[in-house]
Length: 298
Image 1 (tube, helix red, strand yellow):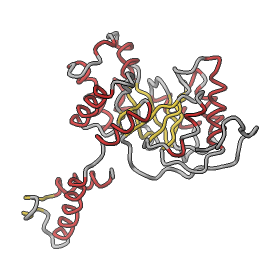
Image 2: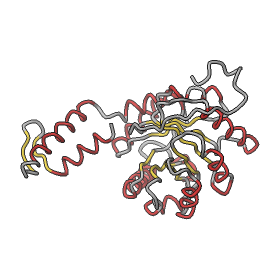
Image 3: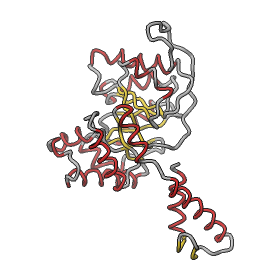
Image 4: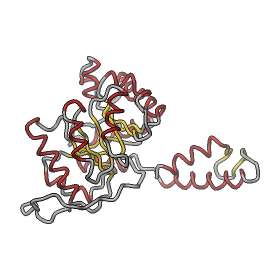
């Protein structure tokens, strides 16, 4: 916990600077409401690979300033965290610009801007944002869905999170389509995944809001992993535990990848880039590159 007692909090911002998050794990991205001080107080010990502090649609306009200052307050008193910390701002023209400016000097890892549509918004956000922080986006509009492959104008834009419910509304489609096996949803997720990967952006699949329905959440995670996703938005620790387990790289795949890397590099040093291996059959450069991809995600 950041504070031992939430009833006796300091009256001023602190001067702590959390170290940047350096792990590569992105299995779970847990959304937190910054009006819930108990949730903020456990940011330093969360099992979520990523934590998103939400200033947007879950926060009433009259309480957005309170939520913003809560985030700054807890960040300024937090010395460490196992999670990659993201702040989800409002759209830039609806307070997001001011939120980024206010938060820039506090220690966290990325800003995620809501309802992005154009390269101009990306450029504006990058101009505002401290250069050591990443930029993430919420893909919630049909314009962003169509233009995703063109939005990465800078390497600091690293991650896109699909907001499936808002996107369906933008497309004029009912939210009742969000069911496992629905072909329209599978198409939307597949296009999002491939377009994001084409642009060099990491895709995070949507949040399943029926928090207590862990069976269906697990089904979605399994389905999305087969599709190629590596990350899932989460509501709370129950979903984080499931996502971490299902999107984890198992020990067999890691051992296989390490063997392929070592064996290929040894053979390549002898100018042999394609050969039969006693354990895993034929190995060449594409097999080697796939092994490196696995190892880079540990």
